[in-house]
Figure 1 (cartoon, rainbow, N blue to C red):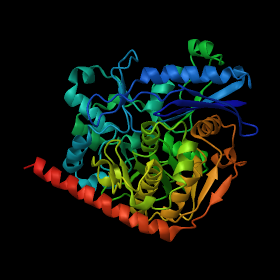
Figure 2 (figure 1 turned 135 degrees about the vertical axis):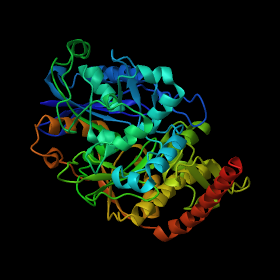
Figure 3 (figure 1 turned 135 degrees about the horizontal axis):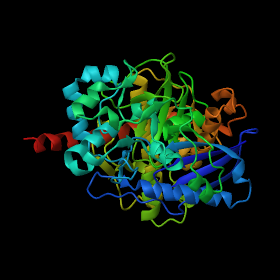
Figure 4 (figure 1 turned 30 degrees about the vertical axis):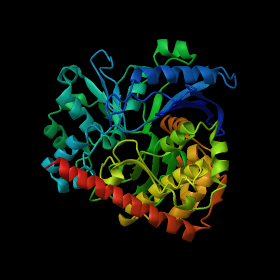
Length: 502
């Protein structure tokens, strides 16, 4: 059997077709060739069109089919990975009512904070494991408050992956992992949170039917199958947010195991078997793909919004033809970038900074000493230092990884960045040749029961290489200087907040 995996990213769509018998990728394709637009009508806002997602998904599948490396009619199940925390709202005819408010949008921070205080901080943390913060439920509350005419038409609210499954099957459903990432889920009752729904004035009918992560979410409609050369009636059997899916694709399923990614955003994701939480909600526990009422499996997620997006901004701003060229130039500069420091926090409110918008910053620029190569290195070091800062928060909450698994993709393709990450965190990294679309395909195989267990789906997976810390002391000195710069910016932001509220 062949399995189709779809990874709905912020920048583009990637699809992969995997042979279940060998667990090997047969063909992959990406669409579009340029990065997908993020619509920002106001500072701190970020939206995308769900219908554009769907068009790009279809084009990616057709592009994969055009490789002629497989027969599309042999695809037996579909899995979907998607950018987390986005809000998609549809009416009774399944028409999209507005653009999706995506993960890095910051407009609902204040709404979430008010809910956190009104429901009660201790109650939220004990039952939701998080503050409502800037997640999907708070974004829906923003629509209710600011776009009442739109809100009145909403029949169902979904996460992005639920929308994609709806377009394939015509059915609307979700799972508890998705609801937990939207902060709709009560871990004490193992049901939709009445606290959240009652506080925001949401009708329970807005929430789709709830299924396990690995299950039949519906079958592909005839018209969709004909357009994409698929077999009508094949099931969609897996849906997960991109970070739980990345962990699955790295076989990170058991307590203490940790995964990382460094795409548009950067994430460290560790598995826990306890209903724990960060008192300040700076790192966020959600139901992992193998969570159940009888067996707690949480994914504790550290997210840094400004990761690959900063690296891309540097490349584009300096008009560098490709990342390899940029990395080679950066390598001509010593560790610490000769004192040049960059804070990568310029892509919305950062949860590790208590949902503050401090922006991206550059410090200590010396026009006689520093070249563009220094900027290239300082950007990658700044991103690695942000990971270290967040990992220290995870450590304070009991997560102490001895090794971190990552796909050999995005920024982990840069030896310079990987070296900075490993030495800044002082944790070895195992790199694997995998990606989210392959993980989604294997997730579909688990859902359709072609594999006896999740572990069986990744039985042939082996690390490409392991990178060990080698210059931790040198990086530690640069990190402490970077952290001092960060703390100054946080204090400046706090002072501005105080002045604004006077």
